[in-house]
Amino acid sequence: MDYKDYNDYELLDYIAEGNEDANNIIIKKYEPLIIKIANKMLPYCKKSGLEQSDLIQEGMIGLNHAIDRYQEKENILFYTYAKKCIERKIISVVIAANRNKNKALNESISYDDDENPLLNVIKSDEPSPEDTILNIELEEDLIERISSVLAEFEEQVFQLLIAGFKYKEIAEILDKDEKSIDNAIQRIKSKIRSIIK
Image (cartoon, rainbow, N blue to C red):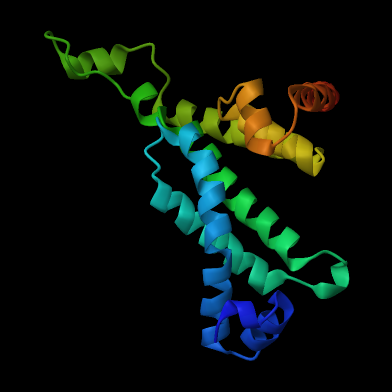
């Protein structure tokens, strides 16, 4: 079987019937797209520890998600749906990695004090582990509440913003102009104000 001999819908039908060759063919067919998207996101992974192979693996997961969940009746081409799933999966792993890249360093406690390190930790004005966990839970709850009122594009912009990306980077990642990003951010701010009230 060669992917040039079959269209996506024939391959999807074969996959639904359990044909492993068809699954391998569609993966081979979409591999260049996954690599292209991974390479586009790679410059944003420099400080996060992610490598091209990590992004490609996430892209494959996104493709498998598309294969499992695609419905022809939605009047959207499989290619469009698969591309969106691949992009979302890769972008989400980049966001998560960038959001957590300095967490361990920022929350660590220094034990280099010469006097009595244990006593200094106990006396410290640093938040307790319980306070830290509570703050994280409150932050995650707020992020979840905000995300629930955002449109899909606003949600993508919001997640990239809180992961530390700048306007220009967000525009490049999402293939939009900076004005679109700015407009989305203004809408996000407005929705956040209404949640806080």
